[in-house]
Length: 435
Image (cartoon, rainbow, N blue to C red; front, side, top):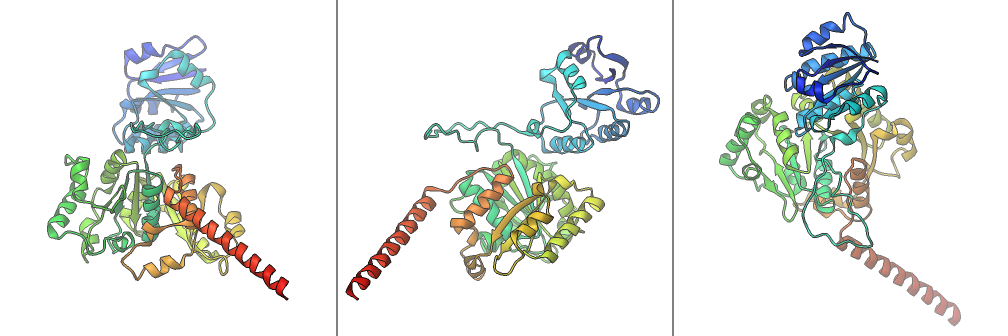
């Protein structure tokens, strides 16, 4: 097996000393030199030090493209993955068939050789998972393990052009999945997210606006901590969710179109379990494209008809071909589905690939009425509608369950339905005896 090493460190070379099974063709300390070398040398594998490239990883991506074209396997040696930008880079490399990443604290020649000779056929996304250990008293019932605490890694989810879905999904995640949630609204053409979450008219004045503008203009350059950031957010009453929302002004989009949204998302990713980003539905919105590329998932909500499905697919295709958005990020969801008028559920399952289709959120009369009320539907989701959202969150790797209040109401309703049935049955029997 012919191998080129590009570690740039004698210490690492000594740590991963390979056996005679591998032939070391060359050992270079510069990725540009390695790119040139691949034009003249044929090898089977590359072992590359991530730290030889800059923060953006431009040379690594070029190297992965060249290796993929020549069918060369690449093993990347990297530090701990502790930033969102690093996870984005690894995802980009994985899309170029780089499937092995080894951290410096766990290196050995045997481990590298095993990766070279048994190179995986797909990327193991579990290496991006961050195990979160939270010290709190959790009663163990019937020896159940609370899976929402272990093996959960922070996520960024962008919702495209649907502030109602953003509000409802984030509220359910905060209330029923017990997650610390941040919602960022960058639809500066008035998304109405404030009314969806029940804080319409509760924003502070110009002083808060100027502070929020300062954060957006300087995200990534100023020293920002979680406490100071939350001072410029609105917190939902009784819900572990903070909303970064800027009061609508006619010149907001022009003012903020050059903001470093990617830096702000990276900050919230590192400080919150879940970040929900609400964006404008336009495929030409620069901020929308940035947010989608910074996300783990981007949700395209469609209506329950074939035309809406086609429009959603064309939007996704445009984003992939013109904006470089990975297909694996995109997810489809049918919003306000009505069985009586919409296409059969089987239609969507047959026309949208299973791994990209999240499911359905049913039409709800209470949601429609609450649009004319100051009491948001997002904070009052119950019954089967709650189950629909919990199912969708589970498909995104976020587990949750109904609270005790919802379970009690369900049992109470079941009791009264049963009582009504028994009473009606008894009445019919008495009536029959009398006749």
